Length: 311
Image (cartoon, rainbow, N blue to C red; front, top):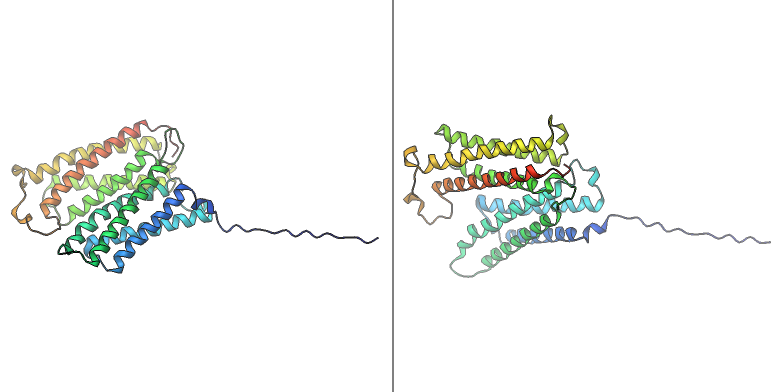
C-alpha cells in the first residue's frame, strides 16, 4: 500500500523592528519633531541665513535636537532600551525638556538677530528666514506636547525626571547657563567679593542640579550615602537660601550708586545695535536670578510633597 507523505512548509517572519513605536502618539510626535527640525535647518542652510554666535546657537539647537530624536527613535524601534547605559524612564523626557528650551530660545533669537537685516523690503532670503522661524516654533510646540504627554501623572510610578521637580531641574540648569553667558561677556563679577559670591551661588547650584540629573539618568541614585529624597530636599533648600542672597546682592551692587552701581541705563546703550549692552546684561542677570529663585521655591514645595515617586 503506497504511503503518502505530507510536507508542511513553515514560513518564518522576521520582525526587523517594533513598528508600533512609530504609530503611537508619542512616536508620531517624535517623527514630527524630526521633520520640523530638519526643515528648519535645511531652510537656513540653503540660504546660508545665519551668522555670529546667535546664529551658531540656533543651528546647533536644531541639529542637536534632530540628531538625538533620531537616536531615540532608532533605539525604541530596535528595542534596545534595556541595553542603553541610561535610564529610559528618565532620558527621553529629560532630553525633550532641554529640547523645548533650546528650540524656544532659537525661535526667539533667530528672527530677532536675522530678520532686521532685510527691513528694506521683502525678498527671498527674508521669506526663508520667516519660514525657518515658523518651523522652529512648530518644533518647539511638538516637544512641549511630548513633555506634557510623557510627564508623570498623579499616582503614577515613573522616573524622577518625569516629575515636576525633575523637569524644574532642567529649567534651573538652562537658566544658569544663560546667566553664565551674560556674566562672562563682559566679565562683571571680578572687582567685588560680593559679586564673586553671586557667581559662586550660580556655580554651586548649577553643579548640584546637574549632578541630580546625571544620577537620575544614569540610575546612580543608590550611590548616595543618604536617601535620595532627603538629599533632594536638603539641596533644594540650600539652593533657595543661596539664590535668595544673590537676588539681593546682585542688584544692590550693580544698580545702587552707594555700592558702586549704575542705576540708570547709560547713553552708550542707546545705539541701534541688536546686541544687548553690558548694562542690559546686568539687568538680565538680576531678572534671571529672581526667576531661578522662584523656580527653586516651587521645586522645594514639590520635593517636599513628592513621596510616592519611585526614582
